[in-house]
Image 1: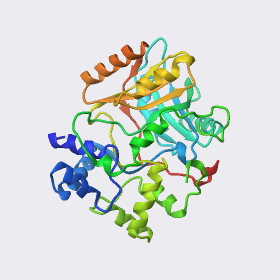
Image 2: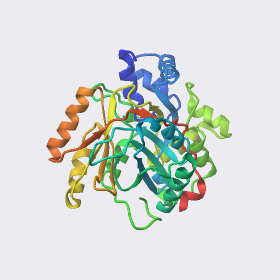
Image 3: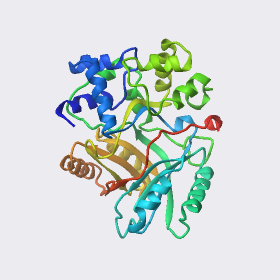
Image 4: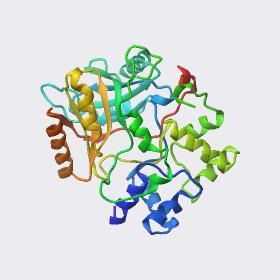
Amino acid sequence: MNPGDYALIKCVEHGLPICHRPYAKIASQLNVTEQEVIERIQQLITTGVIKRYGVVVRHKELGYHANGMVVWDIADDKVDELGTCIGRYACVTLSYHRPRHLPQWPYNLFTMVHGSNREEVKQKVTEIVEKCGLQSINHNILFSTRRFKQRGASYTQDSHCNSKQSNPHGHKNRLHLVKSEKMSINNATEYT
Amino acid sequence: MNGADHQLSDLEQHLLNDFQRDMPLSATPFADMARQLGVTEETVIASMQLLQENGYISRIGPVFRPNRIGVSTLAAMSVPEHELEPVAHIISAFPEVNHNYEREHEYNLWFVVTAANEEQLNIVLHDIELQTQYSLMSLPMLEDYFIDLGFELKWAYKHA
């Protein structure tokens, strides 16, 4: 990371402008060349700072109405192996080792499992339990019932980028919409 | 076009599925996608804008590896049902909070907080506790086991 990266990250963390030359637009805001923007993003990908580069979808809007945070209480010396096993499944979008918070919170592995409804999420968890050999491990599924906020992380609070203005219907409006969005907990055909 | 009522076209399905990773990193990425899909750049741009306006796409761009720039944590709170909504709105108003969900558990509010460094993160966490008057449990990531290859969408689900 170099000092210029924060300004660049500010311009891309909530998405590229959707236009003919998005990097030229970003470059003009940063007072650098289009080629410099592209090369620096390539470096951030190569060095692993950027984990994935492309379209980031919203699961719920695309029919994955159920989202279960599945938490597991796994022996410390097994968590790497089992976290990797669970992280390989197509329905899983996160697999993180986090600290326990005893006595009230015994779970140390957090995985996110998506499905069209709760039943499907439970089936997938059962399948993961069998395939990864987790039968003796205590777990819990925390289904989401309301989404108050969802967007890309803001890593930069202080520097400025105007790219949002080029996209008047972009995340800012969307953010406002989802803030108090209600999600049905009873009807699997509703968003959950 | 609105939410699940919209029947996604073949083109929209490809735009959502085919460029989740390894998106062309050229000066004209949408023209490159258009060439790959056999449509015009204008069509790709208009479709992508519509997909984003309607919330199918969160953004087109980078997913950063956790804790490489800035630091983040998953925080949980236990809030009585009748106070949950106002408390959630206080938390969502923090720019450092990017995800905030109600979940079915005694800990019923779960949110992700991201800041430039550990010190700022702790300030924000403390501030959230002060403003909401509830204590939180902070569970920072220790290890990431997930290789993010994007999420293959199964279209049979789209009108589930």
